[in-house]
Length: 112
Length: 111
Image 1 (cartoon, each protein chain N blue to C red):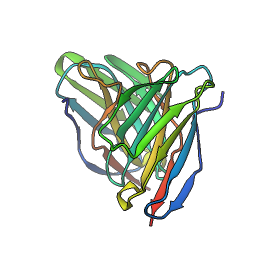
Image 2 (image 1 turned 90 degrees about the horizontal axis):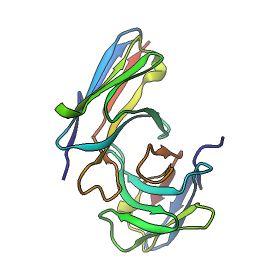
Image 3 (image 1 turned 135 degrees about the vertical axis):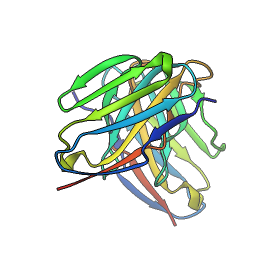
């Protein structure tokens, strides 16, 4: 079975731009969570989606938004990029959000 | 909210050595996971262990939920074991459906 996939692998943007990151969960998993990891720290929770509904939100500004599609894939959108948004963005997949979470390879975003 | 503390923060060992990594948490949890993050950033699942003991090859883990800690044992270390080891918990209360992460233990295995 394929694992969690994310695209793109790397991305370079400038301040003020918008970015869309994509994630496909493991087949059969209905929940997707998004995390931000800055260098030297553990991941920080951004969102969890289950059955296309937002079920949890971390302490991130409204510039961050996400959605989940009928096939359970997900997009993370970040508007008005700041230098501080430079980080590794990780997507996690689980059966229903309560069980073991499996992570994709991440998208490394650099904001210049 | 729940606090997750990992120790030691850094560990440097020779190949073949054994190590014990610790994760303390301040409140009850629904589940606990151990991850290995490789130098490319990939988080690899090691154990899903809310309680009890599990073993997988040279790695084993024990969680004592009543005393709020978990231990990860690595035996006969190899250079490929290098990386950052994270403990993450799903709190019993006020979860918000997120995992709460420790700061990690950075492990370097020298040949």
